[in-house]
Length: 252
Picture 1 (cartoon, rainbow, N blue to C red):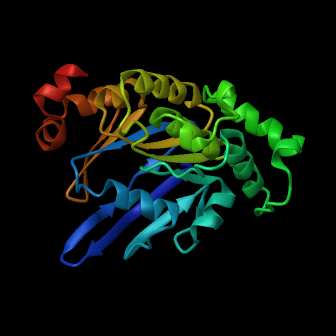
Picture 2: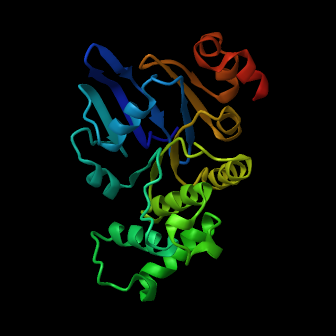
């Protein structure tokens, strides 16, 4: 078995009297798509914020590629290849799709130099166009991001994340707010990324989770209550009672 690409050890984070994450230990293997599910308030987004370095744990450790990165800020983790894509789209609406991704390529090189004509610089333009094509946006390169549909903006955000050359990608509800067609398109895209990099997926869409995941972890009240292969979790009575429910499972 390969060593984990990303690992948490006993992560604990308290807000007032509540434990948002309660001794959470999970792993993400190279090339694996590991889905983390649970009801609202289970601690999923708090967990991702600790993985990305936006929130310091009160206890425990985060390891990436074998190195302890618990004290490292987000930009240091991003430079290592640990990239987060947010629950809410975070693109520059007054820039074209191509310019958004070109800036993500530029940020990977160590900073933003706005005087550089991104559209005319092949070192930025070519990889940006490749990422747009990968995410199904090759015909939308010259459209302002603010004019894209919700589903297209989510795909653009993913293209920007991929432009940073991640080794591990943290996806926080990439299907949120999408209609059936956009959801199906995003699921197909994520399926093509499996095996190329590690993906930790936070998602409420159970059809997507069970179609995509190599492994599923269920959080409830900040604790891991079940983890394993999708079929194992699907049959786990504790997971069923805590989150999935008979109806959700029947539709998966």
